[in-house]
Amino acid sequence: MKKNNIPNPDVSVFIKLLDRGFKLSVPADQERYYRDGYEVFMERVKQHKSKTKGYDDIEAMGLTAIECMVALQRIREQMDGMMEAFQDRIEKLDAAVANAIDS
Image (cartoon, rainbow, N blue to C red; front, side):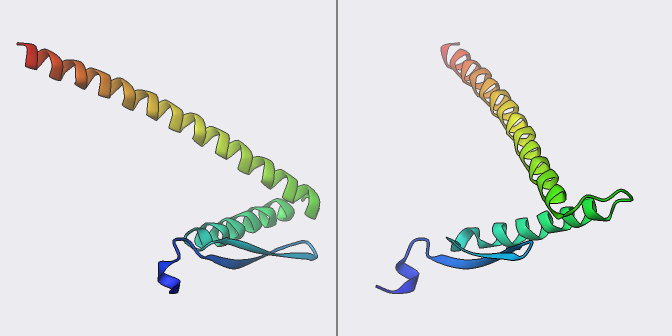
């Protein structure tokens, strides 16, 4: 079987946290999300550590992880609101088309 026939081959992504490294096997089409996410996460950790009363490594990583979870929850709520608004528009459009057909 040729490689281009494989629907979603895995690639390795190396993540380093504190003094430990993790070699993750991730779907190739998601590799950039892991790499970009890792860079953004570590940059935010560095920001927390560099504050005047900076956090230590564990505190900074914990705070960054919580911020990520809050951001995901906020985005999920926004997405749900957008889906609801979209569904309302679809229903109104469907009703308008049905009324136009009936007329």
